[in-house]
Amino acid sequence: MKEEQVLSRMSMLAPVIPSEAKEKAKGLFKYLGPAFVVSVAYMDPGNFGTNISGGSTFGYNLLWVILWSNIMAIFVQILSAKLGIATGVNLPEHCGQLFSRRVNWGFWSVATVAAMATDLAEFLGGVLGFNLLFGIPLMWAAALTGIITYVICYLQKYGHQLVERIITGMVAVISISYVWEMFISKPDWGQVAYHTAVPMLSSDSIMIAVGMLGATVMPHVIYLHSQLVQPRRTDCKDDCTHHLKMAKMDVFIAMNMAFIVNAAMVVVSAAVFNGNGLNVDGIEQAYRTLEPLMGNMAAGAFGLALLASGLSSSAVGTMAGEVILKGFLGFDIRASIRRIVTMLPAIAILMAGIDPLEALVYSQVILSFALPAAIIPLMLITNKAEIMGKFKNSFLTNSLGWVIVSMIVALNGVLLYLIFTGQA
View 1 (cartoon, rainbow, N blue to C red):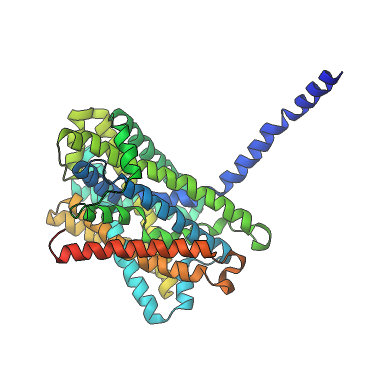
View 2 (cartoon, helix red, strand yellow):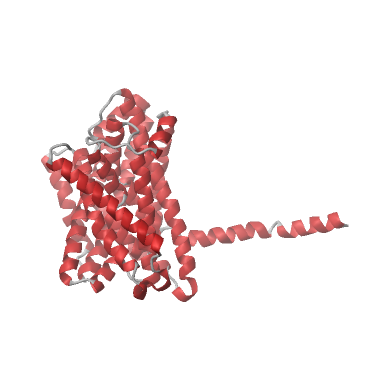
């Protein structure tokens, strides 16, 4: 009799458990999206440039930079999401309300230079992807990249979730392509584990290390994330705590996917290029070199990942530009005009015949110098109880945040010193 009762209860519970799991999954999927859009910036063509240079020149030595940068990225993106969820106002708008006009012009100027540096990397990635995969001439590829980016941004009028799905699909293409390449490149996994855990830096590698940091923790998406979470925002009295919890999971999943992709880029470059004594100094060279070493499919996967990265990150950069301009200065410029302005540096580099990989690395170093201008106001605003209420930063959050800012400023300072003394 007891056995029959136990079996009866188990049969009653059986359909309940899966349905509860389904409900939890639905609840999570409802909030997934903003961090995946943001994560595109963490695996954009700038990452290709710095990671290929780092892996081919220094082997596995700089993998720890990817890990530390990813931890910083998770922290600042959660902080940005928290600001948007708690207040319903994005970071640039808060700056526009709290700081003087002169200070906001300064913030806007730094953010605009960072946006141009970002767009330089993203635009060049799309152009090179079309050129390498389909043999399209660079200037035609530039026009095609600009048109597709504009179309993706235009689709926002049909709902932000449509753009999120398109960009998430491209993230999946990038992730699958590079993770597959990582495993077929047959790296030294012992060295991978060692250099991920143990920091190692020299005067000749600091330029690449700072570039990796700038390519991984991106200023424009710190501004953007506080806006992207708002369409899912509900009344804070009822659901803000739950929304923040789901946003943290969104960030954790998306940023760790970006970490795996970035680590895979370094690992592939270290195993294939450095492991064969090759110092690759160009994205085209990386593509051409992969073909004889790993086959047509590996080279094709590289080109496809680069193309998806360039197109998706260009769209995200354009979205961020809108948030930055409206928030800091209170006025707007049509997306098409703004897109043309931010494309100009990339087109100038193509016309001048400057090496795209070198341009990508330097653009990411510029982003590292722009980072404090985004993180410092974020730290100051999220620590104000009159703005954040119960979501005000804890002592631990403040401590971690200012440690991160100090590390970025110190690393940038060391790089400047080495540049001016001729050691970098």
